[in-house]
Length: 371
Ligand SMILES: *Cc1c(COP(=O)(O)O)cnc(C)c1O
Image (tube, rainbow, N blue to C red; front, side):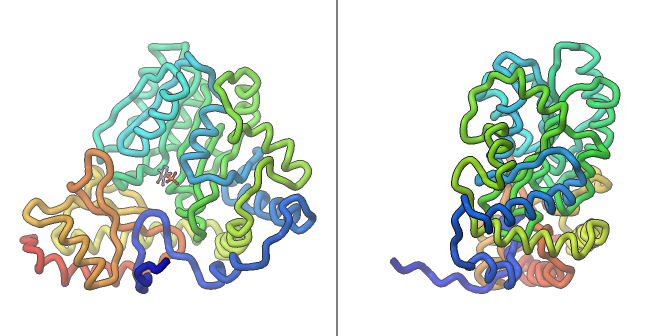
């Protein structure tokens, strides 16, 4: 089979993200027995490293799946069909969490917020006050489709602090990039994926579960097999996973975690904040408009930008890719065709974004942008 050779590119999708060379190399180490001693060392080291990045002493499991697998795991391990839950959505990923809970038969009270807005903790409080039968609240930390970071700290204060409900968090495009102290904010299940903040390819998902989460597990009757966290627990105590894991990605993960912890979580957060700010300032200076309605809640891992009405979005994205080697992400769900996104998470520095801004400055006038 022959495929078009992959040209060097500035990959600015909000996952997958570029991979440092040493990690690429590490992932080609010889295969090992996943029931052997080398694997035990690998899974134990990476699980411990992840707990540091999650800032938790809760149990944590590495699943061979994309981020969505961990979201599904959060739902099926804690809920039963008919359980009343709140699922907040302000974008495509919020919608996905709703869909998962719905698919497995939860009685979902869907709370919709405008795409581009942040989820309002007061609105969640009002619903929790109205309906004491609510068992859990499902929330996205960083809505990748709109480039908005929700105020998870305040949401958690309401859900956990005031009402003591289960809190299930989609942290796929935030964990390891934006501050999310899982224990500090008392989040019960927190799910993320390898291809966002961890500088490795897609294929692994990580999930933490609190003691409260395990209590919910005892009563949870949704069907589960591959994503049964008790199976993961029984294997992990022996230094294994229940099913054959993606060993090569675990090699990479070990180095990715070394990089994150070596840089220090605080400076990783600062770097993302600085680059987020730099990106927003740059696109605004070009005359573009952010999709986030309140810039104070704009994401530091992905910037979503309204597609100017006068330009052909498809042609613009193709020119960015073909002429400039910059790969942008399009809009998702109902934003398809109406926005484009610049990912700036994981292995990213200011010069990667400077290149994007310069390329935008060259391509936008060619497609008739009037800004
Ligand atoms: C990327 C992403 C996901 C998961 O997507 P996968 O394709 O399954 O890895 C879920 N939620 C958010 C917020 C994301 O950014």
